[in-house]
Length: 120
View 1 (cartoon, rainbow, N blue to C red):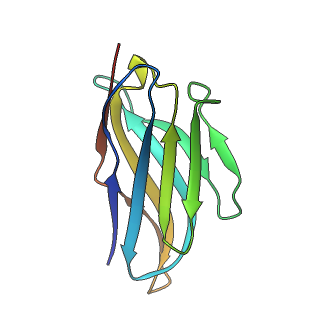
View 2 (cartoon, one colour):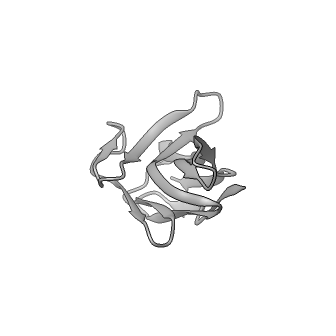
């Protein structure tokens, strides 16, 4: 069984920073890519950032230059550093990881979601 647990959300003023963490635990053979998504009220879920197993990153245009995705492979943890936050970044943020589990089955696992609120 694999579980992803998120932490680090909260309330911050515009211009502030937050770092989200997503820790994977359980029967893990390897973690391929990490994704961070967000969903604002009344909007569709949006892919915010991706980091591959090789460390290549990709970002949504709306967060380029402000957000940084990273990973700590020994800790099986993914991160999303969010700087220069804007009110429009307010959303529930979800991590997802593509994982080969202990049974060598590849699938996507999701975190529980965490609220990020940016006040103006």
